[in-house]
Length: 253
Ligand SMILES: CC(=O)[C@@H](O)[C@H](O)COP(=O)(O)O
Ligand SMILES: NCC(=O)COP(=O)(O)O
Image (cartoon, rainbow, N blue to C red; front, side, top):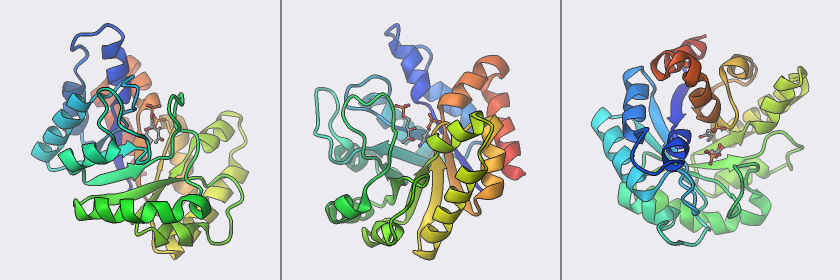
């Protein structure tokens, strides 16, 4: 079964909008885990707009206590800045079960593209091996919506990473436009190529209760989805516990 990792970035957005400690990111993560979520994801950004270093440390401890996966996302090439020690330093401090490398530019509103494995593949090799030496499974954020180059997934696998996380934003847009069939075909084909190259497939970005089921029906053997923006929004109406349980029901099919 596909596992659910809840991204709690948006809880920190709300907290930071007023300063102080509420809503409490760790308490929100605990509610998600008590509802049955399989793990917690965060993507601390160098500008500190939501998740901060102290949140990363606290969530690493919480997930350790629960014995569930902590998935830390970030750009390993972004330099340390102010209160952000850098992605690799955070991985060293917290040893997340999964490190998801994302090629975001500084100041980007949100993640909107995966790695160019032809350009970045060689540079990723030492980073992946360093993270594996820390005990992290490594996943690489990857595009699956456009035409893949013939050996894209082979190059991703050649970095030593175990998984790719497909950037699902374009699928979510196609679904919202009422015409997701072509996009689903592209993701299914990309998944087959990743799996043939020996990579496990994760997926994330703008997945929601509305669009998740169709995605998982069309794209076989997705190992993990990380979901935050829609889930936290939906939880405003239904509550966090109920919302997480609804996602888990979708994953069970
Ligand atoms: C890597 C990814 O897909 C992003 O969705 C990310 O984790 C969300 O980041 P923000 O919450 O900063 O938009
Ligand atoms: N890796 C994707 C993620 O963690 C959550 O993305 P979103 O649901 O906030 O768009």
